[in-house]
Length: 392
Length: 240
Image (cartoon, rainbow over all chains, first blue to last red; front, side, top):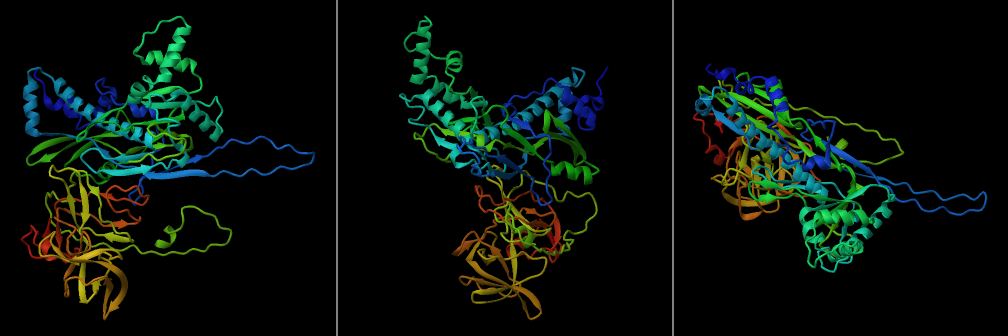
């Protein structure tokens, strides 16, 4: 039986919303390849509305806690002194819009493809080829969110300097000055740095300043490079491991290569003064700069376990306008793909006397940090015990 | 309009506050030529851009206003410039009277203007506005604008445009015309200028459209250097 192209799944993706939705929801070929953001941020269940003035703004409020002091001793009938009331810190920002590099196909390009694939009798190869393009778009979107998430976690700011489109500083979460601190006595990459002691001191001071109990779960976030180049080569860390092994009748050779497993087994298990360490692995590909990373190098983060905030998202004017007043000669099929943040748009339209097809993936979303007072940045390349700034 | 929005973002006051504000919603001119048939006007180009020269005062741009969406040599990295134009009524030394009605761009203190050069992106004496007063000049409403130094001599219906910076031989900010506003737009927020500043003030991002035919007399005033780019061969029409 000869395959009839107009009845194929492939052509239905541009004509039938249900067909498109069902396919992108169920196909095993669409995956999340760059899911760093999903491990750090939850998707806001609420949609942030776009105002008629053009902004989709959100406000994040954080209440600041401080440790309460010991009691005052009184004689009977003596009264106390009132506590001061703490305020709250808030920041507001707006949601930007993004578009992935898109897919276009002219009628003759499609016919050419059809003929090439005709010999196999169905549209499987066409569908797979298109799906791979969509996968690239989903990867673009995932990378974009991951990059922004890593920037926000490691600097408290998001500066969009990638891609071919608009470049701009997006927002600062206004971290309090005392939450950006220096490394301690020595920079962490210094060979004589007492790394574990310095981290323990930073964590203890942080917990004390904010009145966090020892049981309050915090975690350290260390970028991959820092973990391998600084932690695993640090003299104190290595000595701790050598001592542990010696005391447990395990031999260690001089200059042994320390790996993550040994680190976890010994340091994480027996050095209790620091919270668990999460190694941050995220990398993206930028059209101009090649391989980039959102995480600012040299920054370690200490923050509460769990999500650091939510991804704020809003509506797309593109969809709203088309659904309300779209052209009758252009058909657009909208579908969410992989999650509620990514909107896939399949457009078919005339080009001269023939047709032409487009696939676009758009996203209007940005991560928001909702743990601002509890988010500590350590600039590990700057020694001292004071506060500092992230710098450019 | 400024009254309600100029309030601090938060605060508390134990007296009585009485507030009143009033506003008018202006009309809109049908600037686009009424052509019937399958058109391909007002299509959106890639990305749009950050508006590099937003008005720092409550102001408005109008349907049919011209923009330059400036890409780099690979057609990437967009920047957006609005062609702001001001029609001169008369000029005497450093003061210039500019026609004022509801369909004109608003001049503001600190803006650097010049007489429109003969060629788009050309040069001329560009100086800064130090004072703007709304007044009547005989029967015409005008803005009486004072510059810190006299610009090139202008006569009735000459057009002023924005310059890059104050200079004896300053160059026109807009270097090309390629886009048009499909509708009016309001500047409600106080903007930050510059490409990527960390200031908390507002940044405007906008995608103007390609291709349209407008009535010249209904559009914002166009200087000769812009009219020279007209693609239309009909008198009174401007096609971009």
